[in-house]
Amino acid sequence: MSSEIVMPRLSDTMEEGTILRWLKRDGETVQRGEELVEIETDKATMVYESDVAGTLSLIAAEGDTLSVGTPIASVGETSGNGSGSTAEQPAPVAAQVAEAPAGSAGPETDGVRGGEGGKEGEEEEGEEKGGEGEERRVKASPLARRIARREGIDLATVAGTGPGGRIVRADVSGETGPTAGAAARPAGEGGEPVPASAEPEAVARAKGATTEVELTRLQQAVARRMAESKATIPDFTLAIDVDMEDCVALRAELKRVAVEGAAPPPTYNDMVVKACALALREHPQANGSYRDGKLQLHSRINVGVAVAAEGALVVPTVFDADSKALGEIAREARALAERVRAATITPPELGGGTFTVSNLGMFGIRSFTAIINPPQAAIMSVGALERRAVAAEDGSIAARQMLTLTLVCDHRILYGAEAARFLARVRELLQTPAALTL
Image 1 (cartoon, helix red, strand yellow):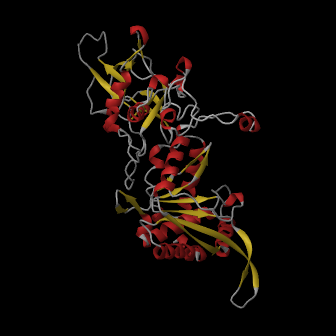
Image 2 (cartoon, one colour):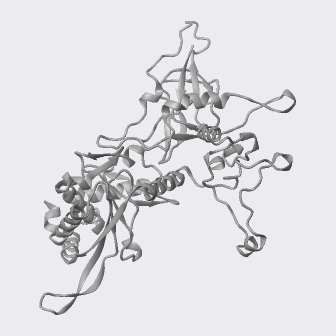
Image 3 (tube, one colour):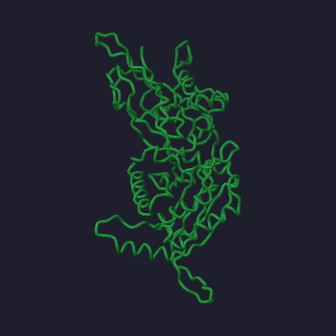
């Protein structure tokens, strides 16, 4: 008798995971709580610990990409113990996965659910008949198999671009990859798929050598969610200029009174995060989500801070930002950014956001329009802090430290007047920054 270990759901948006490395070999004895396997999710690489003790039997190989709930290994009774006892039988592993903090929205999916993983996994193990009665296995992810069945694609005609030639979603869905879209076409001589679109030779030569680069799982997740956002959210944009003279003076004073060796003072982005959090408390609609035709209002104000990672964009979360001191937000945001760049960020730190702040001001960008992180109601884009000529009430011209904030809103949740009041309140708080230190 054995206990089945399945691909766990390690983040609120995880649909499938890739086995990067087994930390125990097939046939070895594993103990409860012992590190078992490294799994790459759409957000991070995690080490998963065994919840059972016994002899390990591997089902999934390194490089395999499997849906949540698909069996990856089994743990049976330890041989030679003389007791005849079987491995411990815990609750199903799929139910014991990491959960996002309170206030997190539910998992985002594109049609694949953990409950379907077991069925897909069984079909993965099935063998397809080859020529002359020989049996041949087609290596394909469960999601790729599902798409192939739906579209009537013969997987035997598809060249896989995944690890070890494995057929992945991009190979059968027409999204990316060298064979994307080719699978639905008849096979040419030798069973090779006919190219989806043959680019004119002269055009191909004009571009020079072309190299195709496989997207990482993180990049695939970002691409999918951003495409989903632009395709499904009726957004609108509001922009406002903020006089940051008092914020500049406040930061200079904090630097002056800081003791030697202390942490750097809060950045202007930290001040924006705090101002947004306080304004969200007064405007709960902006702290909401749209899901299944309903507006969800969240009790916690969790502000995501966009951080540039290696080849992708990651949004760790500052939880309960409205109740945290400005200095605490600064320390937490700095620590989260460091963990993102060191690739040690964990899924719980990436989930549960109710609003997002994205800043490109450090690159000299005056303003930009960010893409809403669904299912959130809005995202705040922060531009560069710069001196601009500003007309005073008496008609004189003065150089002032100015910053442009751009708020992108989901019109299903926020209407223009409510969004304008929220943005005006953020400006008011930044122009009287003493309120940020209370």
